[in-house]
Each structure stands twice: as structure tokens, then as C-alpha cells.
Image 1 (cartoon, rainbow, N blue to C red):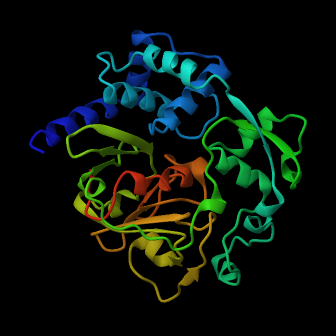
Image 2: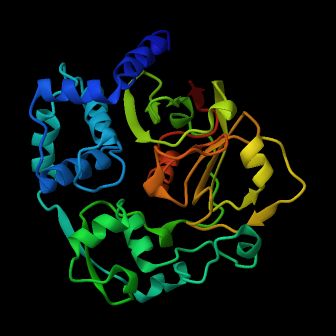
Length: 326
């Protein structure tokens, strides 16, 4: 991969632009849509092609801009800031923007309104479930509770129950019931040669093939600056539904404390439903309990992705994959 560093630098040169520059460039390259449905259609398309726009909400934000740039770069479009290619493709591939989802009774086992907030009380529960059906539905369709409420003005989101029909973005859903407990992933002849570049400044993680093609790019929340493991590492372990050792002192100061709690697995675990451990001890890429905060809040030293993005990692990388953190 002689030219890999050049390619990475090219991507970073694009992603490294300040947000206001990205916005101005996008406007110069072509009109940015303002219609909610058009934006949602584009977001669904980008999500489908593994260029994460963040939560699907029909609003043009930082990660939607970056997803368009990454899509153009990956597909060889000369004007990286031109929205037209992605908009045209989205119109063809995503003719139906909304879908109707009926909450099934078998999803009840993944919801626990009584799940406490304090870790010392959470350890008494066998599973870190969703606290409500609206939380389950929002994550399932890569969005948040606020956008669901806008799409369903006639429903009381706080009172959703099995049997209710909810209007949702027409995206390939993240299905918690299909996540196999404690499933591990081994090396793969092709995927283990892929590389992840984690840009902690731009809050993006990009995946490249061995022949330097950009495959995917997802929004992330990086660790606190003093804990960010800058350098080149490798993927060591990959596993679904991990438990989590909650150590407040370690999370705040990077030093193991005397008091810790081993939290059970589940979508509301601090590490979500997936763990990708690196050769840097104690550091990994993982899911989150709060997808709406991706890109905004900070974790201790790891890299957080929305659960719907984290679960895609085994299709893109495997143990021995290189991980560049910068």
C-alpha cells in the first residue's frame, strides 16, 4: 500500500476542512436542498451506501455534508462538493422515504422501563434494555425520538406499546433481535487487510480496502484528548453484546479505581451492542447507549459509534485490520 498515506492525506484534507468551509464549498458546487423529505431521502441513500450522515432527521447538518463529500470521493466524482450526483442517485434508489412499522409483541423482552440510571443498581438487572418503545424504534430506524415525534404527531411517543403503528424512515433497520449474544468474529483473508482511519478532530472513522478504495465512513465520538491513543494499532477482538466494567475513576482520570461494576450487556450498555478491541490495551471501537450524542460528547479513551453503525464493522474489518488513530 505504497500510496495509502497519500490517499489518507487526501481524505483528511477534505474532511479536515472546517464545517463552515464545507458548507460554503457545498453551496458553490450545487444547491443544497432545504426540503425535509429530499434531505431525508439523501440521508437514507448515504446510510445505505455506508457513508453515515448521522441520525436520519431530514436536516442538513455537519455529518450529512461530510457524507456527501465522502460519497463523491469514493465514487470518483471530480467535484467533491457537488450534491447533484448523490441527489440523483437517491431519487432512483429511494423512491419511498417513509415506511410503517408495527411494534411486535416479541420485542417486549428488549424493553425495560424500570432500568435504573445508576450503575450500582444496573448490575442487579440481567440486560441493559431500552427504557421505552420509542427508544427502541428510534434506534431501529437510525433516527431519534424527536424526529419520530415530528413524523407521528397523532401519537404519544411516551406511551407506545406493541400493536402501535409508527411512521419511520425507510431504512434497512437495526434489528436488536438479530444480534447474536457473544458472537465473535475471526480473521478474514480480505477484510483483515482493510484499514480504519480514525480522525478524532473531524470525528469520523473511514474504512479503506487493501487497494486504497474508500469503502465506508461513519460519525464517531472520540475519547478525551488526553486519552486518545494516537498511533497505528490493529484489531484484536470483535464481539457482540459485551459486558462492561464501569469504573468512574478510570473513565474520568484514566487510572483504575478500587470501585467498579460489571454491567450486563444490552443496547443501553455504555459500549452498546458491539466491541472491537485494539492492540492498545483497554481501547476499542464500540457502540453506545446514546446515539443522538455521537459527534458531540466525549468518551474516556475509546471510539464510539451508533449501534446501527457499530454492528456493520464485521462486514468491513476483522482481526489484524490496521487502525490508524490521528
